[in-house]
Image 1 (tube, rainbow over the protein chains, first blue to last red):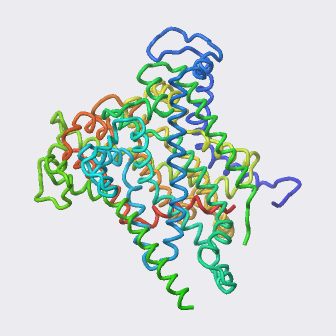
Image 2 (tube, rainbow over the protein chains, first blue to last red):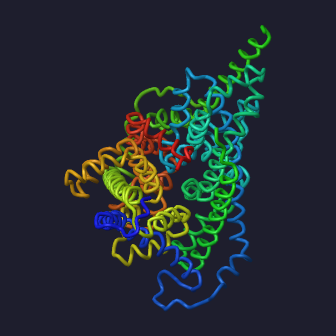
Image 3 (cartoon, chains in turn brown, purple):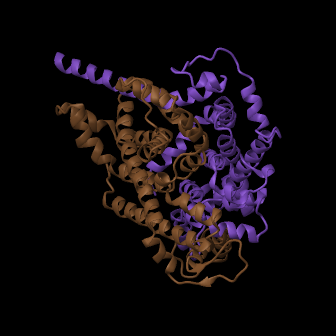
Length: 303
Length: 283
């Protein structure tokens, strides 16, 4: 920065251009991001029905009070967290392991990357539709699981009971995103200088040791980033659960918060209550974003 | 010494084994979609599943395209999805590049505040604002139209962030030289900055295209008429109504995925680049 005492004419002209370039986006974000979140907060304090013409009545925090005692909402919170934890932990551990494996077979690196990433290319609705058929009682899921566990002819009721339907949604999500996270980890691993491994090798470290002593600590920022990112992704899950319930799967075990917001606000027209749910979801996600900032600041490594 | 090379070989075999098992897991459902789309429903549910179709069961694709009501809505929904995805990619790229340029290369009061405000919108999940957004869209008279599908996604904070990070490294000398030559600021943006941001723009365009091709929640809210539906809505309706006709279901799924597969195999580098962006936290 030139720290000039009085900005000259050219600087002022340039500053004006800078403002011109950013103005369209500022207008956009004001209307389509800031205004809606403020409106959501505001609406959550009113009893508002989408179809009624009555002036919405101010009800204060009673929507929040209602939600905190509503078994239906707690069920959604539980469903969301069960889904998020059950998806993101295996996703994190396995994609890191797979990325490390792929890095040690450089010849086949491209093939594996492409093969893992392909499911991420198709849309979530299509993947839900495919898995709907795989989880059919006569589908591939039963055939494979029965083959592996040697239990011929058993129907595992993938979409029928509350435990399995949860696992089914997790499998779909895992399938779709594993390649995505593998690639993120690969680029994280690729940024670790090979000289460090050579040094470790000369000192007599084996693969396992160099993974835990070198790779893992240096990769921590990527691990933190990926875990928070996938956690946030999982908290927002919607398509799979929506399509599964539309096709007759039981709703309660997979009634995640987003699905509940949709049903409350759009199907039942209770805008106020749905807005209160939105704000709660927003706060949960804000917490995780804050956590990411805090954790990633703590371990900025340089090498 | 011999022992350690043997151990290394064993671990290599183990790694290949695990990697291959996962390949089967990721690829088999896609192969299932492709093969099942060619079979009559009674073959699909046969146990065990036969991976090689006996022939080409055309009626699946006819049913997929004609729909349950025989109104041939499929081509229309594909067209709608294409329009939305292409327009959104174009505006995202253009606006993100412009905003990123303004934030990266000009000094003005409040620049940092504006940047942080835009970044803050990344923390607002779409799901949390969809209902007020729906009310705004209705107020603007955009429900059930292309405008309603497109306008909320004209640009996104991540795009602005990516373009800014990229343009910060853009050499100032080029800009100064162009100014000395008397080029207008708009021309500098249009003929120097924009054409020189190729890879970042491609990555961003693909991200935006995919997000729209995949978008279910928002069209579910703003679209009511059959004619304005996008692909995800068509698939949901088709699957829910025709849960029994597996072959036609997979034919729809396959047809809907073709544009994305085509993009992926042509431009896989940018797809993969798009996800790798997250791991680099420079600047």
